Image (cartoon, rainbow, N blue to C red; front, side, top):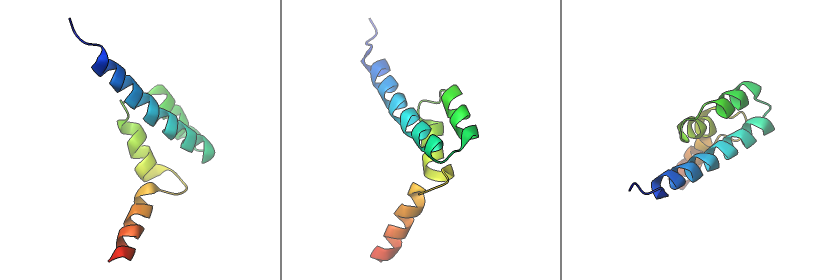
Length: 72
């Protein structure tokens, strides 16, 4: 019998990233991104890409790079 634990963990993983990305897209008034993220199921991949590179305000990767530059 196949365990349902991996499936449950995958669902939780995907739900977390989808929720966060939808929240940010709504806050940034990015309707196209909101619609795409809502419709497509990418197991968190599209959501992570959006959060790191495409959200309009407070791009996470830019904050990380600036912190790394100030440490050196």
